[in-house]
Amino acid sequence: MRRDLSCFGESSVQIADAASSSSSSTTARRGGGSGKSAAQNQVSCLYQARLSGRPCMISVTWSKGLAGMQGLSVTVDDTCGQCLCKADVKPWLFSKKKGSKSLTAGDGKIEIFWDLSGAKFGPGPEPLEGFYVTVVFDREMVLLLGDMKKDAYRKTCAVRPALSTLFLARKEHIHGKKIYSAKGQFCGSGQCHDIVIECDSVGLKDPCLEIRIDKRPVMQVKRLAWKFRGNQTIMVDGLPVEVFWDVHSWLFSSTASNAVFMFQTCPAPEKSIPWMYSQIFRESQSQGLGFSLILYAWKIE
Image (cartoon, rainbow, N blue to C red; front, side):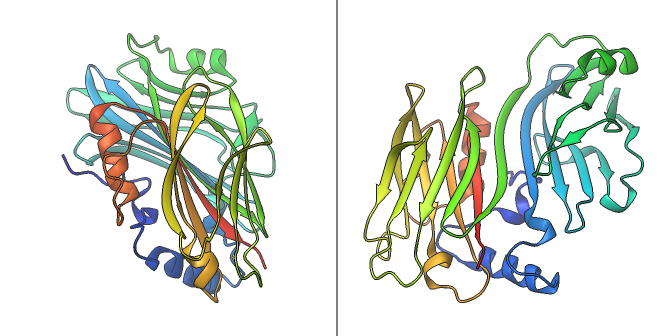
């Protein structure tokens, strides 16, 4: 089964090719800014669910424009990558903070509901509280996000599904000069951890990369000019987590650049280089294994 996961498709990166960084830099320049373009303020999450027993993939993408306008996109795909239903709340239409969209798919009806009218946002594109986003199939709650669960069930008249939805992957853009911060939860019932990536490459003959989780150093890469791509296994919550990194653009690009980091809670199918993030996604998805967190770290000059 070949699938590039539509919500991540444009940003899937081949580790041996800096094309994605160049493309992103071009986009930033066209947007009239530095490396902090509107497209970078984005978080995408991928879930595996079932529609009456049939597997499907649901991608939820939150975005934040330069003017602070919020956007939301929800897509339901089958396992072959065919879009079954999609709802877009564009930033310039975000005054419509409450709504729904439905579409007949096969022998049933997919409905997407959202209520962001009272949502509270932090510095990122995702709401912190006061909202719900749902996907319903034939009155069965397939996906429910947000803290307004009672309101969501009352609005949709849906029943709880027999099987739970799996959170497969998260992609996030982060920004910094030499320190980049994010949060990550590596298993469904696990603790939410503080992730810090530190790399000072400006004017240094021998730059070093360090990753800390909850202020504890878990990985350090020296001689980074020679090891700008690679992978290493760390332990988090008693689980082996494979960390992949590609900092080629940080070290060798003269334009707005980003490095890519991936944390995966299951062994990667290939440890040889080159490899593709989309390939690892497909393997995890088809085998029902693990969770992947991808961080695009943008350097701010």
